[in-house]
Image (cartoon, rainbow, N blue to C red):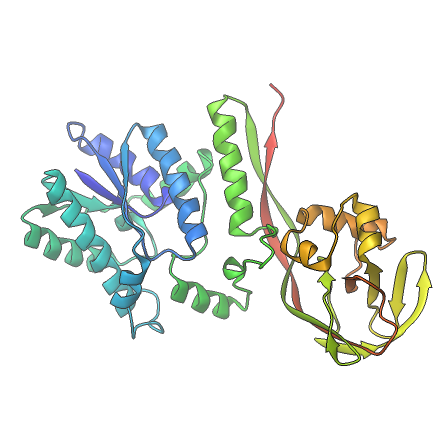
Length: 361
């Protein structure tokens, strides 16, 4: 039996139920989800599905990440709500490829872990699966493992086995609508030009779950814990000195009362130069290098190859700023002596992140 897999939280429980209900069937997992955006999120979900299948002894096949074909299929349906017409096309597309793969492998039956997702319509999924199975000359099974407290059991199992729990369905359109309704920043779509890994970004989660994989292979005990913290994202920044754009690097947790300010350097305390308005502070690249023990020769080099985020956060305290200071700190080659214009579009917000703690053996 070929089992289309959408994510580990849905598949881990679903696959174990299938193993009990169909003990003589060889289950083959098929991860085909070109709807998942961005690719880093796709990779993260695949990584956790691989771990789940390894734990359950199930073979896994990865389908093609043919996002362009998926986007073509849902064109014109971008603003459809969850469980609407776009979702129907999305199910049809994934079920079509899954049915074709099952027939290609000589399997007589296929199913999908989407059936156990509480956010999906079971009736809608069964209709799509039956139609495509008939076209391929195979059968589609649609067990309802949600009933009889199945969803609660699924959640308990996901927690016990420390599965990665994503908080959106997968596609770009569903994500943006969900974040707009929540009045939250869609920070899953933020990737700095510098490549610096941001806190609680998908890239940070990938690093954590890859490390988890390494620890498990070495039988090293660990615990994943959650913590609430103040997160930050920089969306855009620009520095002008006497109306000319000047290269500048903005330290993490830099904010302005609005988005724009202007003024002049008013005074200096040690290596920190204070602007006349909005608590803006400047340091030189030389000071930056000295305090972080780095060797950047230009702002361009720093902008496109910055150190770890946590190191730059630590720099704020070395400049004498306390843990609650959200003042804008700007790094420049030289301290401006003329009129300054500064635009910073950034957001700070309450967030939750996971931390991996290695336990003593």
